[in-house]
Amino acid sequence: MRFLTALAVAFTFASGMAQAAPINGSDLAANPNIALPNGSASTVGTSIQFSGPPTNQVIVDASLSAFGFTSSGSITVDTTRVSGDSDFWIGLFDGTNFDSYGFWDGGRIGNYSSAHTSDGVTFAEVGAFAGATNIASSTAIGEQGIMTFSFDLIAGTTSLDVNGTTVSRNVLPGFNSAAPLRLLIGKGSTGETLQINSIDFVSTNPPAVPLPAGLPLLLTGIFAFGVMRRKMA
Image (cartoon, rainbow, N blue to C red; front, top):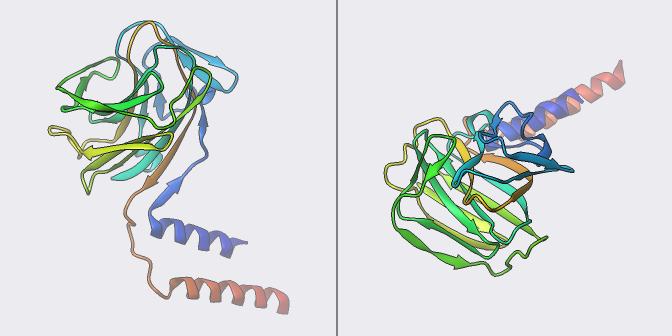
C-alpha cells in the first residue's frame, strides 16, 4: 500500500495538477483560506446566500496560493439563481486590480476593457464595457449556473465558461501577475440575492520536476519486489 501511495504522489507531483474536494457553500466561512468580507451571508442547507448592501460588494476572497495555485488552473462555482436581478463577478485579484468577468441575470457573460479596482471589500467598475455574450443555456430562477473561471498567467490568458458558453481574453493591462494569487467573487447590486452551492479549486501548474521516462517502470518494479519479499517472508 505504501508503494502505491508513493506512486500516486509521484504522478500527481510530476503532472503539476492538484484538486481537493469541492467546498460546499455552507462550509466557506469555516475555511481558513477563504474570507467572506461582507456580513450579509446566510446558509441554506449546504449552500450560502448573499444579499443586501453595498453595491459591488466582494462576497468571497480566496487565497489561491493556499490551494496550490502558482500560475494556472480553474475554479468552478456551482450557483443557483434565486432572484431576477443576479449579477456575479469573478476573477483574479492582485491586491488592487480585480481582473474579472461578469455573469449577469442568468443569461449573459462579459467583461470590461480594464481591470476593476478593489480594496477586498468592495470593487469599482473601471474601463469601457467590452460587450456581452448570450449564454446558449441560460439560467432561469431556481436553475443552476455553473461558472468555471480559468487562467494561465504564463500564456497571459483568462476565460469564463457558464453552462457551456465561453468567453476568453488576455490578462488585462496593469494586473500584477507576480502578486500572491487571490480569487474574488463579487455581487453587483444591493437588491439581488446570490447563491453559491459549492466551489471547486483545480490547480494545473507546470510540473516542478519533469517525470523521468523510466520512473513509472522503476516504481512498478519496486512495488513488485516489495510484494515478492512479503510473500517470501
